[in-house]
Amino acid sequence: MISLRDVYHVVAATIPLYVVMILAYISVRWWKLFSPEQCSGINKFVAKFSIPLLSFQVISGSNLYKVNLKLLLADFIQKFLAVFLLAVFAKLKPKGSLTWIITGLSVSTLPNTLILGIPLVKAIFGDEAAELLAQLIALQSLVWYNLLLLLFELNATKESYVASPSEVAVELEVPEEPELEEDGDEEAKDRSPRKKTIMLILLTVGRQLMINPNTHATLAGIIWSSLHFRWGVNLPNIVEQSISILSDGGLGMAMFSIGVFMASQASIIACGTKKAILAMALKFVLGPVLMAISSISVGLRGQLFKLAIVQAALPQGIVPFVFAKEYNIHPTILSTGVIFGMLVAIPIALAYYFLLEI
Picture 1 (spheres, rainbow, N blue to C red):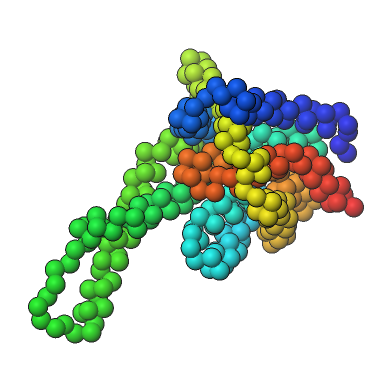
Picture 2: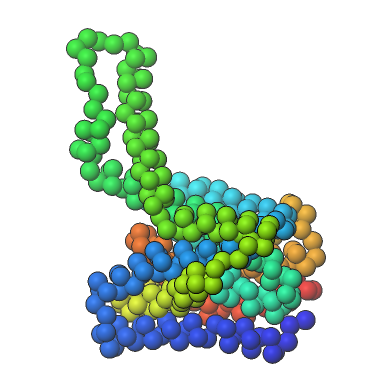
């Protein structure tokens, strides 16, 4: 049973993050300390340095040889179901459908496990549950953040080809034949440029992912985790401290970036009330419901089932907002999700916990 002292520890772990966010807001809105170019640079620093190193730290510190496969499978199924439902919904909004899938996936199924998750779960379920949550964090950094990057890059590349059709035409130009061709040949000729366009897009996306720091950090984290937990090899102290200096400030810098972004908007609820309510419904209703379905389908019971639901009810993660700001895809919705999600995170998580105890 969770105590008031445990609740205090959770609150104490989150309040400093709000202090950073409020300080950033005041620095831009009232004190005018940062220009728009400098604000953009702050977000780029977070995306290219702090978050990748934080991902490395989490993955390399997780024992990949001892995982709870049922919990990880339930998490995977939850996100698969979310993508399926979002894809169905996106058919109703053909314009920008991929961006809505990206945004919906970020809001509903990528929780803030690193900032709020560990202290909250540790307070409710104990140390062993916190170790299990670390596995979900590693999976999130390893698979879902990189999938998110893939979707962001795919969307950006697709838009660039649409925006400059002349460049694509040069690449894909097919000489016209003076003679009439058979229907089958004409159909094949029409399909050929389309296939080449798809290949060009995929190659561009792959190239961008290969040079993305988060991809490198994820792979390095897997390799080092394998070495560390297999043979007990430790990082040299100089290297470990160098990484810690940047990664430890990653969460704070991400919150600072959110505060800076808030200050640049006309309203704190930058996306509008309707979209904010939709984002909250996706996060705190759809996410846990899908997790309950996936957990039951793989046979999770008891404390593991409760852990899966409570972590799914955590607020939206900060990393998706950093990516959304970097690629300029609905950052207003994601910033609102982070801000209001963290405000109501503790009472909602406790409400789910007590509901599951009945």
